[in-house]
Image (tube, rainbow, N blue to C red; front, top):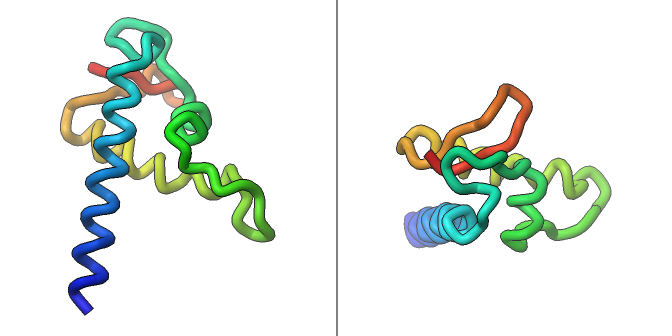
Length: 89
């Protein structure tokens, strides 16, 4: 059913744009600044559904992890260190 795949793709595009727009508007995410941890980006963008059995808040962050990896591949964001925060390039 391609209509569902198309809608899902649109949701992913909107979510990626939301994260990028949030980072542009956030001082800590500016180039050369300290950056922001993925958990903070996840929560401040409103993606946290709360804790559920086998779907804890920390498990839900994987989707935002994929979003920032997409933005990284596009050359828009960078990870400050291996386990560190994210910021704009």
